[in-house]
Amino acid sequence: MLLRIFSFLLFQALGAWLGYQIAPGVLQIRGMLAGMLAAGMLWSLYDFTRGLRVLKWLREDSLAIAPPLRWGLWGQVAERVSRAARTRERAARESQQRLQNVLSALQASPNGVLLLDAAGRIEWLNQTAAAHLGLDPARDLQQHLVNLVRNPAFTAYMASGQYGGGVTLPGRSHSSMNPVRLSVQLHEYGEGRRLLLSRDVTMFEQADAMRRDFVANVSHEIRTPLTVLSGFVETLQTLPLQEEERTRYLGLMSQQAERMQALVSDLLMLSRLEGSPPPGGGEWVALPALMRQLQQEAQTLSAVLHPSKGQSSAPSGPVEAKKGGQSLDFEAAPAYELAGASTELHSALSNLVSNAVRYTPADGTVRCGWRLLGQSAAVEGAEFWVQDTGPGIAAEHIPRLTERFYRVDRSRSRETGGTGLGLAIVKHVAQRHGAELTIESTLGQGSRFALLFPANRLRPMA
Image 1 (cartoon, rainbow, N blue to C red):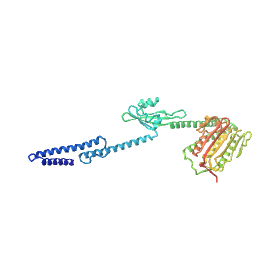
Image 2 (image 1 turned 90 degrees about the vertical axis):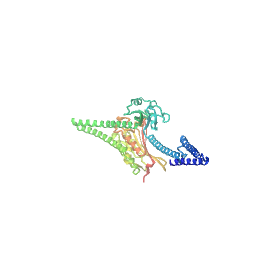
Image 3 (image 1 turned 120 degrees about the vertical axis):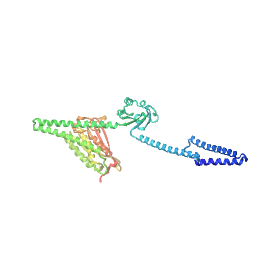
Image 4 (image 1 turned 60 degrees about the vertical axis):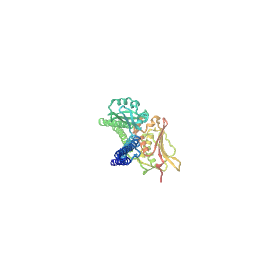
């Protein structure tokens, strides 16, 4: 400001001096006034020109470049405007960056997020919401959501204005073979705007259904032996029985108690498998020793199930069938060791062998063995297989055999003492050891169960 006043006075003095020098002696005072007036006009024109430069700079939105003036009043104005513009631009960039960070976080959310204006039009949505509701994030902006999601329950939910409870809808890719369930809830914010959150609850609903089925199945499995036990106890308490009848009843009670004990044992095994970390490679199980143990258990079980028929056992080589008896053929295992938890591996393989023995008729055949995969110099894995000549399994039942308590023939399973959890245990053990369970079966001809173990869990015995 002082510089502006000083320059104006300097112009006035220069104009007065020039007017004084040019004008004749009588008119020197008038010449001074005319010079001062002319100098003031020139200074005003010059100052006006500087103002026009600043105004042009502002009009052309050239705030990103340096101000056209650096000194004087207009220079200070331009500099302050430029500084204020840079401050606002920096604040706008920071706000834009924060907004982008928020949108990126919402875009990465596993839940669907969708913003609606006061009229119910889509303002923004993430990819998850687009996948859940079958929308296009670019094409469907500013479209009414109720026109795009044609579901009576959702339409009624939006029209009700009561958004507390939410609504569950079938997903866009929902089908009977691939059920998809979505939980959708609206939240009001701002001036009539709404936030829609969608969440895939398919796994939660399936887990809840599995929990209900599991509780129902366990209750059903335990109720039957408990009913038998309580009936026999009541009989023993109220009726005078002969020693032979008492012995028979006590034997039946013992069978039912063993059945409940087996069920509890399998449930505890499943619980341990699901709640413990996968086994490492520090423990090694010798295949020949494991095979001998499985063979002894199979012989014992076969003798119990078919006491009047007997059984034959061939530790290696072809099956040696005995007329009228169940034949067991266990081939010699290769001299290899398998990395994993010995109790888990024994439980899985024993379940496969015991199932074959249980469901094979008294005059049938059960074969079991190990097979190395790949060339002898480079083993690519090992297969444990069990093959029987039982009744076989229909193709529609095979995908569900590893479900808990799933039985093809419930009455026959209970007669043979099965709990319905054996193949579920086998599946869990296989997953924890990197193995694959394969099932092949033909009705009337028998079944073949196999576990394929990867090469990184095998090593030759010392």
